[in-house]
Length: 561
Ligand code: ACM
Ligand code: ZN
Image (cartoon, rainbow, N blue to C red; front, top):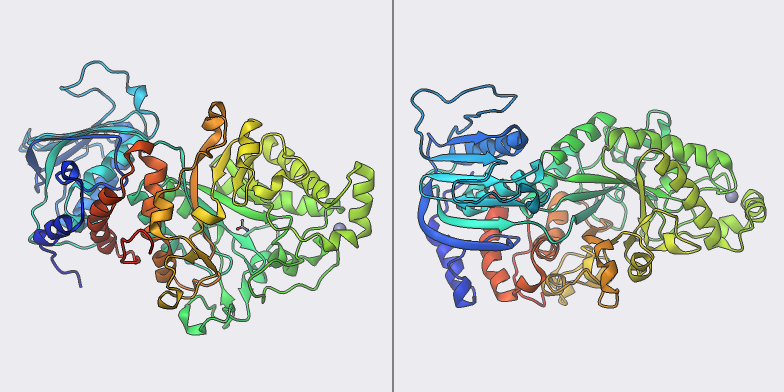
């Protein structure tokens, strides 16, 4: 049951945080916008408040209207110029108290070029009678709306109506756009399965912090989660284990099939719905199909594409295993390419993640086909054989208009021509200096499966490591030793959530939040605006927003955890 939270509670949260005097009056936005100034007065949301939008802003306008209806009970869905709601201003509508989402300059602006905001930038002006959001693309409108929602009391994120709240916001002028274009979060759904509604709830949470890339780690040794029509055994067999594994309490998870097996998968219909859900929140999904290693689940279903012929089992602990594709067999390429063809059709985004990490090559040594391939292609060692595999896949991926992305190890033996590197154990400087784009997700700074505190006994069991909130907040994605002319190749930073020891959604959320809020600020806000005390002040309010959304989080705002 939702209870009303008095405004005083929020003020108290503001007052108890240590803050720089100059910042205390500014709204507690996360991530911090580029430029923000308070204006006199307040805007009061009412039952009669109209939302008017250009067609470009239709999706963001509907999102705003839906969220307001859920939490305030106001029915503000008066859409003007919305192709899906061809309604027109009603005769008795007040001309004042309106929210405009428009590509045009507002009254207070000179004739600025709209393009200077970029695809995700926006301007927001709040006056006592009117709110203006200007952007030049749907993503910018969506973020203008997110900021507008954060100006409201945190209860606005509630899924049900909250009464006795004054739905008013301070007048402000905000000009904002992200520092980086890749603001990512990776979820491993192989070690444990998370349902479509659970994934969608996490997309909602991402959107609150303006994160825009969901890297969906769909396959690994312990399970295969995406329906592939041509190879039904991938999910009939590969999506399941005998038990939840990892020495966990079997009752900590609910992902059991009707037959008692542990696991689950997404149908292609599920995937299409999640892709749409994400797109409505300005989130691109990057699917990962792990190759040539971490492929045990696929090879349990189709062992003929391994070097040994199997058998394989998904009932594995954490670690690195011999479930790798046979690179000497052309049929393995056909298999992977058939799978990728179905993946291309489901995910409209540009990037296809092919994994590439932690390949154990023992099987290749003992395989006549792999050895013959090496001889024929003049490959000197295992890493050159892996490089051959990745380059061959890249040709296929590029021919379908997509870009290959892979983990650090895809550099070994020679990086494929147009590949993007996801740096988890190095290679960013070398790749970016050679003109490749890079996503930063280093093990030490971006791994959300690591402990949040040194007091590990007080924390849920984790894989190891130590990544307290202060460290992720202090992270700088552009490597200090990267020559500045290559800095534009650093697309942004991403938090990786490997779920071996996270068998349920609440646990996933606990490990992600608040660390993803810190990462969002690293990815979005200007580098020189980072200020730990001010972040803590704003996060105290942001915790209320997460609570309203029903997102679990580690309720601790100390730097060292
Ligand atoms: C990884 O963490 N193995 C990419
Ligand atoms: Zn082989």
